[in-house]
Picture 1 (cartoon, rainbow, N blue to C red):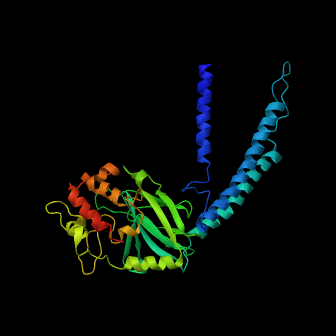
Picture 2 (cartoon, rainbow, N blue to C red):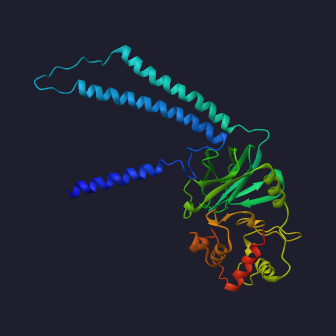
Picture 3 (cartoon, rainbow, N blue to C red):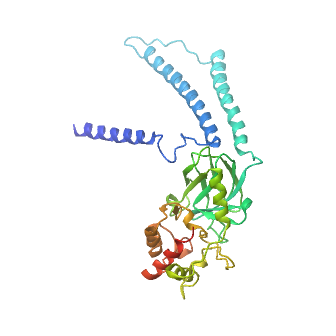
Length: 353
């Protein structure tokens, strides 16, 4: 009785998990395409799926038919008619699968080339995979550099030219894979190589993605967020991103700006982060560019909502919020900031709109 109850519980749990996985209302569902580079493969998948269902039903039906019709019978050892060596049948069941595979291969190969083709009006965006966040550069629009959120125009093809960070140290470069399921396919980011991927969003919105190649400690915390903007919002975003950050002149934010560039004998923020200011010295480009930090909605690999409370917790102890390896130069270290220093730095960061 107990075994039967346990078996029923296990079956119910497994079925429940399978049903949960079948939901279409998921932010990373590839079954809900929102652009042609995702929709075309999805449509092909649907066709192939139903062909596979038909083949499955046919084969399983024949197996069941044979199992019932030719099952062993008492006092009857007569073998049914054997078809081994029947040339016509063997040609038939070889030719039919070959034709099915050829019928699937032709549109598949054609689509592979169509999805990879470069269009003349595409917006080029460079993507660099770091541990554990994505960096975006817009070479067609000046010196715009952002992180975590890939901002794109609606209805315009976007061509991503992607690579992974090269550290210059042996065994330190890792693979990443960029995938925003509702907008397009998945493509690896390889140190020292450029790979490409095309995207296009039909409607304005925010589309969640993920690094889809295991890349170490915080792989699960390396998300990608595509933000598709209407033409007017896209032009306004470009104008804002091309402008330098405004340095506050007084108050707590001004103190934070000073601390950002100089933390005394501790490692300064500018040793990893850059904020473009009018006539200011550029910082390093090890970590995310913070010039217009508050124009984004998420940070730290698009994991946390960008607000005052989360920034304070992050500056107090970054590795406690996101697993990293700052002792090996990967990720943000705990700088040992005082509460007063954190308040000042957060006040400054909140001005970077």
